[in-house]
Length: 312
Ligand code: GDP
Image (tube, rainbow, N blue to C red; front, side, top):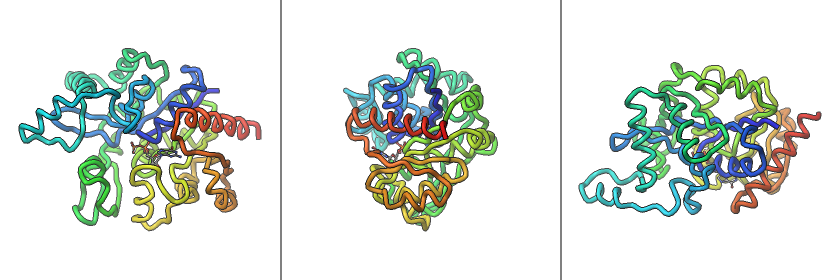
């Protein structure tokens, strides 16, 4: 079964890791958010792409979910000593990725080509596609600081500011990366990973042509909200601050124009009826992925649910 998955970073990577263990590499394409990308220390940093790639390559830091395992921090310590910015944690091994990517971007190579080559070097056989080769920047309008960039909000300010609005700078001029629309058209189903709907999935869906291609396909989402809470990060806080009660139902509502089904946690079974009323099929199972076994189980459950919707 050919799957195209839409993913952000840490939450998305967990399900992708499961799919990678359950599907042939040729059957899995991952479209990754690049709205979180930013310039820092003279380099271009692409946090979600790196998280997905490090996970697929088996070299992600298992404790944080981002960055590389067995890191050393010599360069960051040196930067700190010089009074430079050390709020964004970059380990020495991770630094190599940013330096080499920035060098290649500077000589005019497209991001998608660079990622394709990195994947080859890291023995990743799945197709990893940045959502666009053009720059898109997620901007958060906050009550306290006005407009700030996503990493300023997420890392430097630890998601504390109150979110009033989210928009994606550069989105109108951004086009899908080569092969992305073809991959959607050839897929049997599209999976929206349990990533932050506002800042990880919406940027992907806002690129011209992506939403309209996905609408034609059987699409299933996995809720990033369990029992009204995000497992990690500001998704639930964002819903509240934008005036919506956070829940798996709110996630279903968020995606209601594009999904035919959603996977919610057993704990949220009381929401199934309201989800059905939206015209969306709710599937219930455990969707908390603490261990590798959970990733494999959740992804297998999602594949079984896809079979069921394909046979309806
Ligand atoms: P980021 O770009 O690194 O913030 O990563 P994502 O947007 O991909 O992931 C953040 C989302 O993943 C949060 O909303 C979390 O609630 C969700 N998440 C993290 N771990 C899990 C999990 O084990 N199960 C589910 N269902 N969601 C998770």
